[in-house]
View 1 (cartoon, one colour):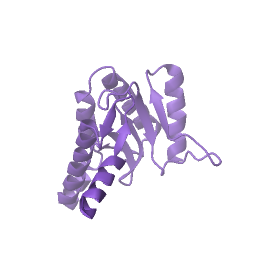
View 2 (tube, one colour):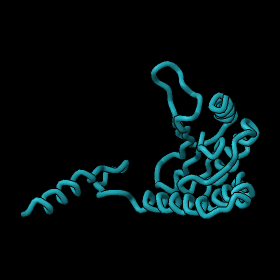
View 3 (cartoon, one colour):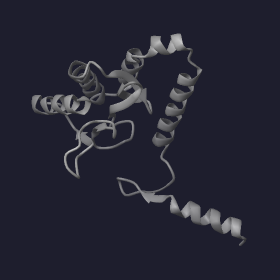
Length: 167
């Protein structure tokens, strides 16, 4: 075995991992590859856009609503409700897609996002915040939250988080 094949084999072994359901996987899942492909397409579309097109597409509302419409239930209902909560709580944030998921940005930079449970075959959806969100509390704070359903209690907490994130 030559040095090149030894390096390749070591590299291949290093990406081996165990998934959430205990199956061994090599590299990225199909869902992860699809999300990365969607992000690449989003970046290409942004790069191709003229200044006028960028301004016209700045809110990304129709793209986000289209992505939400594609989601299976119950993620679709949850994403619709989150979209309304985020828009009402932080009107300065602009909807856009990010890795094919609904996200909300300030000056083009994502502050928070929704990740469908169905898309990545997980047991819960996720509401996440980027490092640009003002959620810092001491030396440790959460930046992603598991969502199984939205009750009035969860909605009130999300409103507070989103308002704090953009403060």
